[in-house]
Image (cartoon, rainbow, N blue to C red):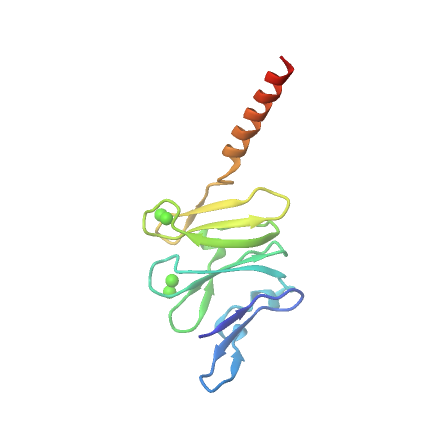
Length: 157
Ligand SMILES: [Ca+2]
Ligand SMILES: [Ca+2]
Ligand SMILES: [Ca+2]
Ligand SMILES: [Ca+2]
């Protein structure tokens, strides 16, 4: 079992289990050192999921720095950052993310929790790209508000 550590103020770390009771930080070696190139990413949310259905776990990071990278696992222990290619171009401060097959079509979709802005749902197109569906709960909230307004107006009558 390996261990991923999301950090604030310093680069993230991926600890590979050396199977002798010790761990080595291999984040730069495997390609998950994106934040080191610019500034610490302040990672808040870590979501592992096999979004391309090829049997290995891929990684999405929700970062406060507005860079929210998606790393594709290349199956040989290395990762490729595919954020732009995947269409998950998200320049908002984010604090959480989770994978789930929300439309029941066999591939993992991604929900991202952002700070001070609507949360976002990315539907997996099944070809390595995603479509931004916006905030999946917005319509329900709007409906609830209007019902409250209706109740208020009834009370007034
Ligand atoms: Ca995969
Ligand atoms: Ca892969
Ligand atoms: Ca799906
Ligand atoms: Ca799909």
